[in-house]
Length: 131
Image (cartoon, rainbow, N blue to C red):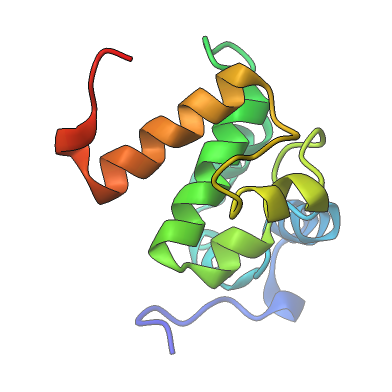
């Protein structure tokens, strides 16, 4: 049970309800509970949602690689809600499944390199080298 009681869906104001229900429907969030806590402050909920929906837009890596890294990190940390939600349209169920394969044949070289970096950082950062 959360330490802060989530606002029941029926008691949410219009904007927070639309953000939460729309985000869950789109697969951005696997559970609405944390959002129902953030809904105590609509501006905070809006800020979190905007960050989710603009992931990777103006980054060097791009949204797809950031999403693959996020999901792989969730797999390594065994976070079920994070593993189950996909927040970028280009990432498919097959992409998520291939993250468990060390060779990751269906990914690009850049995607494989980013995930190898994460795996090494997580498991054996001393094994990291210039290659």
